[in-house]
Image (cartoon, rainbow, N blue to C red; front, side, top):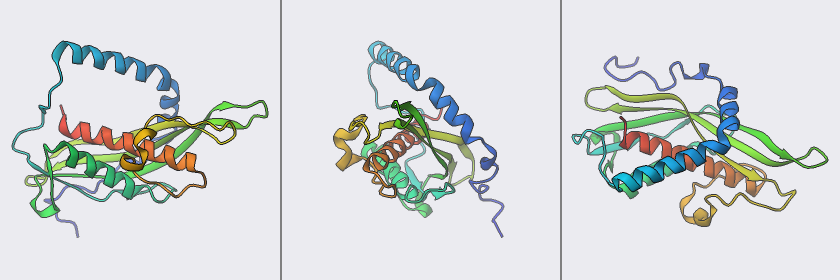
Length: 215
């Protein structure tokens, strides 16, 4: 029986969300959204200067990253996502990664879906470029009080990649792939494994930034 003082299970109510809606949104905004965000970020950095300060309450000094669950139809996704998120906190250093018992904060989540959609096609109607989207539900909890600091039932990381048909790669994050990208080996082609790794890396970044800057 679950201790009523503990947070509700992370899966509660999250599987009612539509992955198809997420995929459609990603397709619709894939082009102009990155450009717009990039321009806005440059403007903010130019006007304010870069800072390592955080809006997270200073009473929080430690965090535990629970192993992600996997409710998708694909395997070998949860460990790379968990490891990528832990690496981001270790690299940043503002929150010390510790075990569950001594942590001020607990981040936990579940991978909900893995989807692909053809973006471009050759004259024979074979897909030459795919969009890959991995979705997850994530929650950050105050370990001492049980208060949910933030909860998002449907976050997503995405990337696009070219198939072997045209012998090209997307090359978005792959310059440091061997060192920094989470390793996925469950798919038949190296291109799709790299794409899944990139999508998980982006998802881990979103979770990390949401934790460091929750407001």
